[in-house]
Image (cartoon, rainbow, N blue to C red):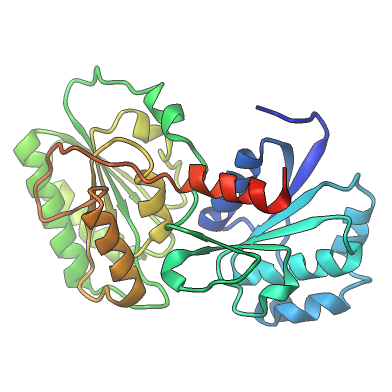
Length: 314
């Protein structure tokens, strides 16, 4: 429900979809009209967010100063922390800043931080979330769910290299073979979507396996027309690789069975997060078989907005 026709929220993003979607999730949850503002911070501001205090003559702040001021500005990720700091310092108490993810600098530079609980960071202006926020709601998917497809649809989302590890060719080969096995057992159509982190070599490995062993599949690369999230309205089974907390979190919010394929190197806090979801009955480990189970949904969005409203006394 929209509280006002006035633009009351700025979402500032450099276009990185995973992070932008989390900012949009908060904007939607707040219930205000929002404006998405594209901004690619300069190198130094990305690397040293605190220099945002010294950008008082920057073009972005001059441009923003010409707009009617909103109640909130929302940013996500360390690379966008600097512009949040700059806005807070420039506009003083006129705008409240909400920053998502650990900025790895003092929490006092922000009005409110939303940080995943597996980062184990607490503070009076910190709200812990279980995983990432989802930019769509379960009811938005379920209300449009199409169960009249001729055969089951399996949707596989493939990630790749990140700060923690770089999957090897054998990891993608094993994933491809398991996806083929699951598809053939169910006589299903497999729809694959890769990310910019997957890499060309990995895509070639997966394409080769599916071309040789499957008759019915569709392959989307990160720069082609992505079926996500609309495909969630048709898919009967979801598979996502373990490297992406945001993708796991988003698909954990809907009722469709969710299977996570673990890259061998997964460990530490991300492994703990995934094991916690498994213990809660939200996800299953993918080993080449798919099945229906009594899935519990992740309710991060609903719990987080209640805490945000309480924090700002909305």
